[in-house]
Length: 255
Image (cartoon, rainbow, N blue to C red; front, side, top):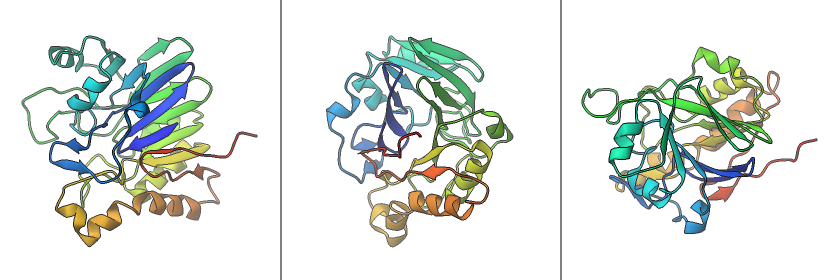
């Protein structure tokens, strides 16, 4: 497993290579990548792409074009729109629905987040409910996408690894997001063996990235999350693995 940055994780399991919410370029609209650019080898051989929702920093068309030969899975209701953009291998998955690819199973689960392409305030343009995913093969991996806490998190079942968002790309968070403290609260509900903070430390507006506040927000949320989970050690034995964007996710081997 490799955290490529923002919500993009390369997961090799069940004989397949899975890529979540690929953001692979140095720019995403007005946002710039503030960590080293990715080598093309990091997205080579991708079989399956999982899109959690339609926001531009999760469904990024220039990045998707780099993996367009892969099987692309989008929230139910978004397939026709993406096919019209020139992507031939698109499938839809709604909450509770399951996809089987060889030894790999993917189930879409609820996410508490706006599903509109242009955010929660607009009404025109494509819309499909946001989802998370549970990937099952050798291990059971919960990929939250973008979400706030929701009651059903406690009903996800046994989770080996949870990929949880802990911030974003700006100086504030809008509705439907987790910050480090709320992500730690989500850990108490999910009780994963391992939690990996994502959705931090990767993208920023060019001018804002140089401010002291943004520099902190690009480096601290993952560690703040780990500290918050650590303070709750009496009620969880989750191991937090803080991984810099672009790096392999390392954790202790199973007993």
